[in-house]
Image (tube, rainbow, N blue to C red):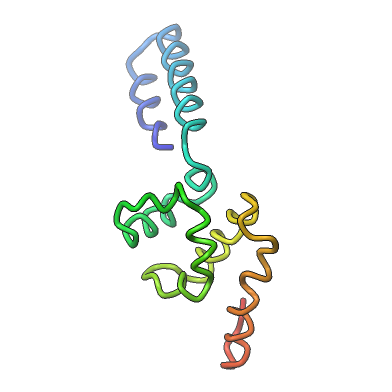
Length: 122
């Protein structure tokens, strides 16, 4: 989450009681913030989130996973910096959130197209 550096700075020049207090406050803050995040923010990597945010330019796409599910794999691959790994990550997240029934079916057309072109699928 990016708080490791903060903890290191606190530990470097403090006594044990202050360290424990700061760690507890940080854990409490992370827990509170984490619970308020939209589901896709919890499941997708920061890289994938950033790509989707940049492409949809503040349309809060991560708060509306149904829009991503409706786009499908074909439209998702047209987004710059979305490749097979990001597509797999998105499909797993949508499956976990029950927006798609079978993540393999969502990706099957992608695999079938690659095979018909003679490309490797893995």
